[in-house]
Image (cartoon, rainbow, N blue to C red):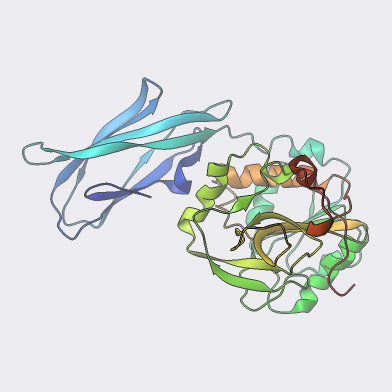
Length: 340
C-alpha cells in the first residue's frame, strides 16, 4: 500500500508478481476531499517502457481498479510502476511516484516432482489450495482432509495447510507420531485461538515492523530481509509461538528481545524448527500470501520441501549453542517435545 497526496495505490502481494500473470491494481481515495483526476502510469524495466495508460479517477467512486500484465521473465527481475496524478480539469500536476515490483518466473515449483521422486509425501489440506498447487506441479502425494490418513501409513514428509488442526489437541497426535518415527512435518499458519501447537502456547501479538530473521536458514534461501518483511505489512497481528527461556528449539523468525543481553529469555516466534524422535516438526505462522498467485509463498514452499528432505540434526538450547554466528546458522534440529 502506498499513500500519495490524494490516492492510495494497492499492489497485489506488495508488488511480488509472477511475470506473464495479469494483476489487478486498486486505487482508493486517501482523503474526504475528492476531485476528478487522471492517473497516468507506466510499467518500466530500467529505461524501457513496457506498458502504460491514463486512467480517469472519478470523484464519486471510492475504488477504481484496472489490470496490467507484466512480461514473463526467466529470472527474478526488478521493474517499477511509475505514476503521476493530474487534475482532470486544467491538468494541474498533483504529484506522483514509483513503486518497486519484483517479477518472478512461473517455474518456481517445476523441479519439485523430480526432487520428491521416491518420497512418500502427505498433505493435510481441508481447503484444497495447497493440494491444487502441488497437483499443478505434477507432484505425487497423498491428501487427507481430516488427518485420519496419517495413522496407518509412514510418510517421509507431511505438509499441513493453514487452519486445519482445529481446537482439539488430539488432532496433532498423528503428526507427532509421524515425526517420532522419522517424518519431517511442516505446519503452516493455524489461527485457532487458545490452541497450543505441540505443547507450545501461542500468544496474540501485534505484528512489528521488523522481526529477527535467521536469513542463512535453508527456509529463506533466495529471500532478502525486505522480501520476508513484506508479508508483515498487511497483517496487523499474529499468533506467535511462545518458547520458554532456553527452550531447545530453533527460532527462525522471532520478535526482538526487550532487553539486550546473552542470557536466554522467553521468545515469541513466527517460525521455529525442532527435532522429535527421529524426525522434525517445523511451525510456520507467517501470514503467507495465496499459494497460487504469490511467488514468495511458492519460493518458501520449494525451500521447505528441500529442507524437510534433509537429515535432522540435534537441536541445542540457546545456552548450549556455539557463540559464532556461523555455528548458530547451522540448523540444529533434534530434540524432544516438552513433556517427552
